[in-house]
Image 1: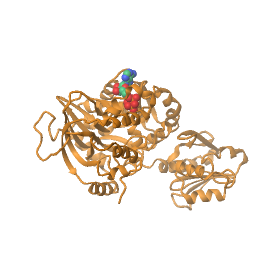
Image 2: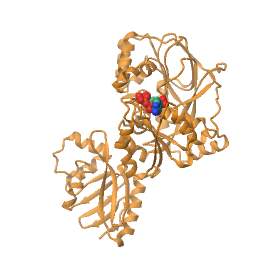
Image 3: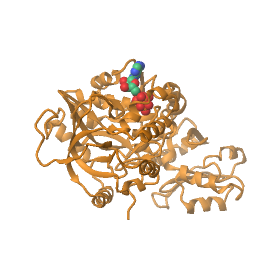
Image 4: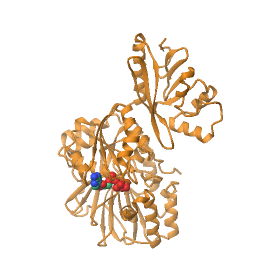
Length: 522
Ligand SMILES: Nc1ncnc2c1ncn2[C@@H]1O[C@H](COP(=O)(O)OP(=O)(O)OP(=O)(O)O)[C@@H](O)[C@H]1O
């Protein structure tokens, strides 16, 4: 007999399938009580919670809590009744439906290290019980998806040469099953040459898709933003289409910031459950060109590590560390002239801005405002400060670049795994974080700076100068070198950067901030 226990709170809705099976939806989990011996094999969802007693190692339990988002209370409850409870985090629920004679629930189950795999449970139901079960399914899905768009329409772009060249197989193996279980509409296309993703984005039917999913490194999202930005209806395109990344490259900054993972399957779950989030984009002008940057601009040691290490691509993400150490030992400097339109120039004030912005109330009409502006002026926003070829605007702070070691501007926090380089960045505060480090600091200081990036103590180190800026101009003094915009090599010449608040759109887990720890608060 299937029935709904309507006496409970809306969040705590229990579906009693029969005497031995009941499914209870709470605010953050689906609890399955299933006493049938034949179903015990299905009780793997939380991995460990329902196997016998307290024999699991603590680390494994913690993993189960982490992956499933299960609270300590729930975990203990499950352990007390190990034979009857089975909990699935609502975040991991991909789909639920009533078929001819079954209730089928699909979810992402924590699998081998850093992965989820699609699993289903099903329960037989009779014709006359269908209606009640359908009501329960509607409730379950509404809690499982919240404000996320269900069954997203995805344009998937696969770069066959991204990272170690395995993007296509990573997509098929780890992402496609998650999208299918979540009933996403998927249109897959391989990029065939450099710049192909720009063309695809430029011609994209905006009303046919919710997001462009790049299976690549950060190079393809860079192209997609730029393709959307080239359209006559650039503002609308950038506000409407979310750009997102399945991590198939070396850095994969966009995925780390959006979903806090380097795993393709967990990122696919992130996309399915992802919330539309406005993103600042930065116009980069060089001579008469204008491009859009979403991630970072670097000059000096980081640019060289990014671009001067292509020959050791086989190392994966390690090539950045290796390149950094080699250059550090040489104590190279990259002389340049820098002027910055500083908005917040003090680290404590930056921390206060971060704390205030990241806890501000939700902005429910942020999207509609963006579409209104797009309807009024459809093209890219005008450049408030002109281009790099114009006279330097007044009021910009001149920063000494005589012995520049590292000039690094970030629009996102994490540049690659364990590299939370810009902890105080926010997706749409209209500001980028500009780091400058003198090339004459000692090797010891430089090394300890590198070591303190993962701990977060890098932020407060006195030799790391940080400003929140809305624009800057950088003019190299040498003839040759590396300039990296979002990891792509740009001509080594003067450039100017200007932020456009909330011009682009990404999907994130939180809908408001990056999946990175903010600056350490004193
Ligand atoms: N079929 C293709 N042939 C050649 N180049 C391509 C093709 N498809 C895409 N590209 C180019 O590959 C470049 C790098 O792409 P992407 O960022 O995806 O990988 P990646 O460089 O390996 O990533 P990472 O920088 O994280 O290592 C982009 O500039 C893109 O234009």
